[in-house]
Image (cartoon, rainbow, N blue to C red; front, top):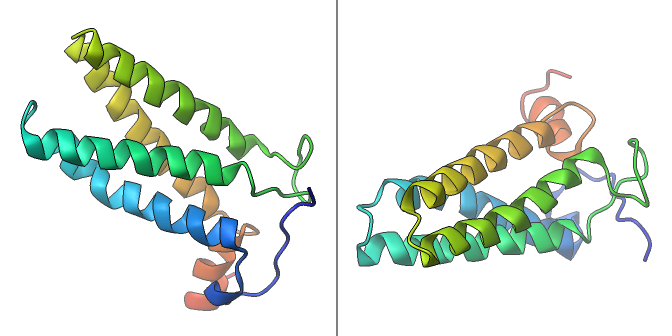
Amino acid sequence: MSPILFKSAELSALPLAVSLHLAVALGAVLLGPLALRARKGTTLHRGAGYVWISLMLLTAVSSLFIRDVSLPNLAGYTPIHLFTLLTFAGVFGGLRHIVQRRVQQHRRVMRSMYVSLLIAGAFTLLPGRYLGSLLWHHTLGLV
């Protein structure tokens, strides 16, 4: 499998894996606060939680198909891919905690996963990364 490389700033020019990754990650960023803030035990909390977990899993799986050979990497996987491993561990750990009725641990894991999602998103906005270039250069004209 060859790494996905792209030069265009056009969103329509992105490979399918990257487009899917961006869409589901943005969905997870937007839905996360609802899932975290909804009253615990309600249909809204459970429904938002299941959708959020699905979005997080899709984000993690799609990231496995995105590689970058221009940054320090191992077979095209860069340090940001560590968030993929954290996501898989967090999803299964968080679900295990709630099934075993360990609500405090479940809450802690889910909050940590959301913060990790925001941190990973912030890394994608660094200059030299695709979204960073799109934001800083093409949109704001700064870098």
